[in-house]
Image 1: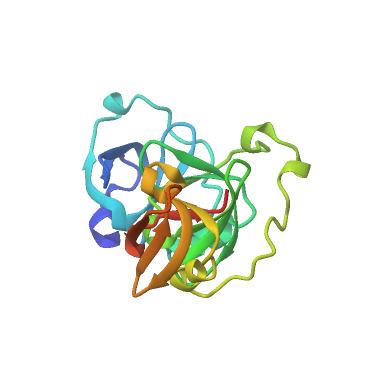
Image 2 (image 1 turned 60 degrees about the vertical axis):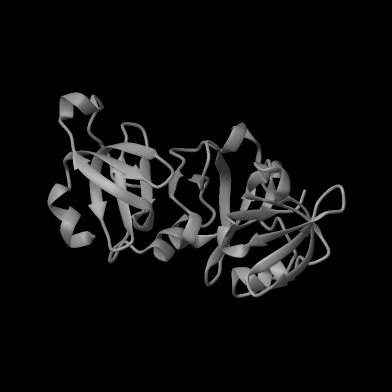
Length: 222
């Protein structure tokens, strides 16, 4: 990807992502796993695995001002996803997974294939790295929902973390959880068992639903 897109740095582009989402702006930088796009207001760090296509558009069509300052999450070497997430730890950011909802808060830990995220709305969340489409750092001294520091704890959860997403979900066996922000009725329930990447979830009416762990984007406890 880096070699293919590097010649477009500084140009106006539109990037189509999985889930029929588009981001338009100036292409600022290209790495092996991340593109940085300035949309006129914010720097957006896009995960390359979700990019379906990129096309150059005219500046008139874009109709946004060029950036006057550099990206907040500067990288001295390769633009790798884990390095960007590490740079973003403790920084207020907006992340996008799927659907029409974004999540606001900050990263607290980064593990092998997932990271923990604190949201004032959903509290501690466990988010799969492979499902992160993009992140956008807040500019200046803004905080989510203009909340004070007392509402945004530094250490929001005492639950120990497993190295992998699969084992972390196993540790939640017996607990009531919400998968994928609860956008589907069968995504809320008690984890009965996790085995061979299949999660047995008990719904509110006591029925078992078997979910493919590979499609679990996020999990939090209500």
